[in-house]
Image (cartoon, rainbow, N blue to C red; front, side, top):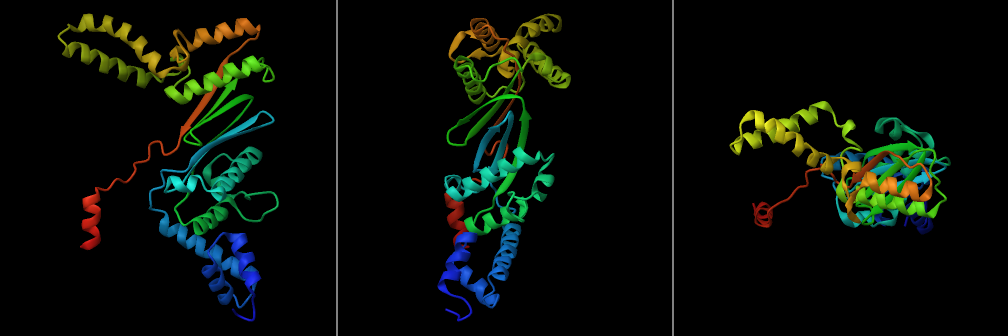
Length: 304
């Protein structure tokens, strides 16, 4: 151990950065025992490691929600392995990021990266992410986030596999336990069925036209004439609505009614006007192509 730093210094640096003992000792030697300079060296190494790992696929991690004072966020942060998502350090970092979004309301990932990771820190979110990459040893990415205001209910499924945030109208009472139970049921419905829209009116015309064309072609291919196909499509499009629109979906806990009629039933029972205004659903790794190597190819690549 160098006379210019002690074992205690190494332990303190390790505690502050989460980096291994040998890397902390090397940084302190390079900094000639100067603690802050050693910390800076490790941060720079974090940036370098982040750059090297940037091309590695990060499709695991977690999605989380946070609601405070009628402000809510839903955010996805990715890692390379599912193991990391259970790491307390990773969870704490994700919690800090959600706090920044909650309090500072960034409009983009770029703006988020430039904000301080906490009120008592000078380190930006981007620098903090680099430090996590250095400490954890995997490529990590803050992928996306949404921030909403209003009467909000959230739901997390599978320890961060799926997260849902639902916004209701101003007239609902978040202190009414019967309403909260209803709202949680709606959030679980969204998690389970993954609706793309709230109601048919929200479906873009281009999407609806494409679906109409697909259905029409399927019917013509089955041998029906074009004029008959148009009439059949009108009936089939309702099935499409039931698949992609939340209010039109069968309620998962009672398939004899749809979500709209379930909402109306609860609204009448509680004598409370209830409207679902908006929802956001995130699933970790959604849309990310995961690398899948054949085991034989992997062994072959190691010996050639």
